[in-house]
Length: 294
Image (cartoon, rainbow, N blue to C red):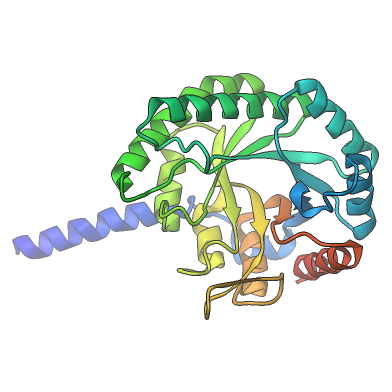
């Protein structure tokens, strides 16, 4: 009898976690069919030819069919504003900034590394606010042979919380990305990690391609639900662990598109692939159009 009671208790606890992880989904299939997710096409600034001026890069992006840019923070707010004005003039506004965090992870045991990471994120948040971008992408932790999973979890959360007063003041979202850092390996854990901040200024920058090696993007989308503030898109082939172009590889794009409709996502999807010339980038934008039309 005691065993059955415990089993039922564990089942109920797991059910509660799943319900929370699903974001208390309340969008029915009927509602999803009435309102399609509105997706806008962007690309990472580093995908544009490096031999071009910023003005020419942004003109090329628009000519290829993109609507926005995910850029990188600059050392000077004036320089950041100047770059943003060039993007706006080309009708491809900078919608967010990518700080990353690989070089100074918030999970590092060295206080000097943490200090560097916090200073970089503070600058990135100020840059985003100065140009009207609403997110800064952050990779919060790295699990290594010297940094255990639980240490990475606790340290990264503690250091992200240090940034929350500034994020609130500037009204910029710290957007946590799922990457190959041996951390946040399931959508349920990712949802829990976000929820524990209890702040609208920490949300998920969900990378559709990064989860394919161990799971299915549509499952992650439905569980993360309205925690998702931005999307990165790329293709991935499980056999051989190969990155691919959009619509190639093992991402089930029709199902991903359906899941985005179900959660009512509306916003940017940013290509994160190798860069290329005008022909390549135009083809990439058309592939994104095909995903949007699914």
